[in-house]
Length: 450
Image (tube, rainbow, N blue to C red; front, side):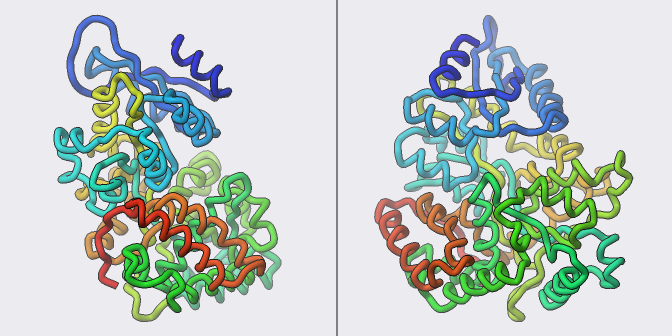
């Protein structure tokens, strides 16, 4: 605890909560070695899920390590400051592999390749997701979960509008137009407090309009980012925004939690966004509110007629790494290994849907074993993994793009707001990307089929 207080004082952490837990394997005697993990500020009920599934299970399994978990919404900033001073948690939580790649390039993360060989991670984890965490052939992060971008819908609102669940992209936009005419939000979402939310929607349009194969070619440097298909994807995303399909004029003043609340209050028929939104939805669509069955979810319908339907926008919710300055790397690896297990995935998803679709090749969860929103989430993720295994996917910017390039795409709202043209925006992306490609920061990702 002394070390934790010293680090907190050094970087100004205002911890929301702390949980003590142990590593999940190994043996030992004598005093436990302390490990630290800083995590985002999850709600109390989700913190309890982590305590039950991770903390209690690990504490009962061995006596060698004790991990202190601190929950705080400023985790990304706190980790950045701490790592720059060669301090911080043993297990480094980040907002995806592109964030971790930047730390790896600075020498702040440990090479996890030896642990991957020890625990068989490469054989266990989806190749696309495993490779996203590599830099120059070495593993520096593992994604805690896969995610896709889909459409959440309120069945009651659709009934009031006299429409069914949309089956095509044309159905979806027609339903949103009808909602707007009825005085509702066409859909709700927003980037208040976290501008990288923008990445969701440019990722969606690059996947759906340009396609995964074209995006892959741009990441390999065989075509420019200013390729006509990419320009069209950017322009179509701007048109989507201008029509009010991303929360309308309130996009900059809404966040995911507020948006789900508006969806539950029947202010909109739709919320378009990543599957992790299930975890926010469980706060407003639940047995206590008596409206669990009102919420539906569907993959985003393919925009292009020749694109498979569904067609995933593949990403991850977060990443896990090991601090290069950690004195207990073996213990950190043991905890990460448990978090990459079938057992952990099955238990976490019972009461925390949306965040723990552990990227296993064999995501062996049975939706019939779950209740509430966990049931549709498990179904959605099994379907996504099936599509990924068929190589029907595009790439999420924050997962598969080098870090500065991902940041450049975060500024897509400059195109949406008419401040810059799609072509000029992509020229800036190209300049940034060229520098990172020359440094070897583009992860080796599998090639989609279309």
